[in-house]
Amino acid sequence: QIKSIPIQIMNLLNLRKLILDNNQIEILPLQIGKLTNLCELNLGYNKIIKIPTLLGILNNLKYLKLGNNPIKFSNYSILDNTTFQIKR
Image 1: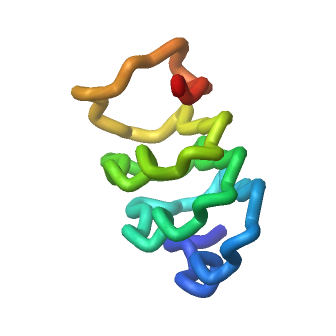
Image 2: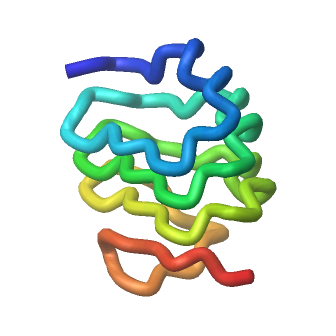
């Protein structure tokens, strides 16, 4: 299990799917905003508390899974407790 996302992943600019569920990730790096081709991001079952607003610039992101993280949701519209469909 990893505790952080390797920064080298942020250089994979054509990456379309990133599955990092069931780890110990606490923080999403700001560089995640570089992954503009990302369509699917699965970060379920981690220790993430805060979602960076930079996820909002990922225009191709259609599927975001964040379930089972201790996220404090204050400004997010939730469809259910595990899966978010990105509204465009």
